[in-house]
Length: 246
Image (cartoon, rainbow, N blue to C red; front, side, top):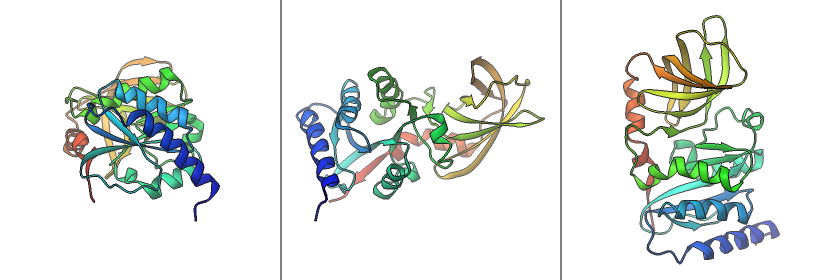
């Protein structure tokens, strides 16, 4: 028996699917799933991915993978308890096998310290969605290079010697990363950043602040990044692409 909420969700996803399924010439494939996200907001994501020549099929959260071949899953989730719970139950996002776009505030994200997003946007405006998709599309297409930063928003601590500052990573690469602090602070010449990634419980690196814009700080690693981090970066696109089963 299907309740009214499930019917409405299926109908919304059906409208999104009908708007994108005729683009047979696009590649590679992207499965787009929304959790407490409107059909209009989901369609906005689909259109932006299509602009990168990526085919998109929207599916209800409960749908299992059915088509053979490699696909990438992308989840757009409202930062609410029920939506996060539903996403974790329906996808392999916790293992890093999906793109995750969170819709909400930094304050709301604090309530999910183990959640790792590819982008955090306050609202699904056209400009915010486009910016988030632009940063992740190369990893869907498999065209990213080691010079590209992986967009990754997760809790981080920045040790400045006297205190540890809370914040979020924004992106990371082989040579450095960007962090948004919870408050403005004067940083010393060297700081120590600690965070986690899917499959890696804890990482710590020493880094030098290179630039700042308000609470956002660009950091360059003092020495070569740990081997475990370099391997994670180099295999990121491959781990996103999962083979569907019939």
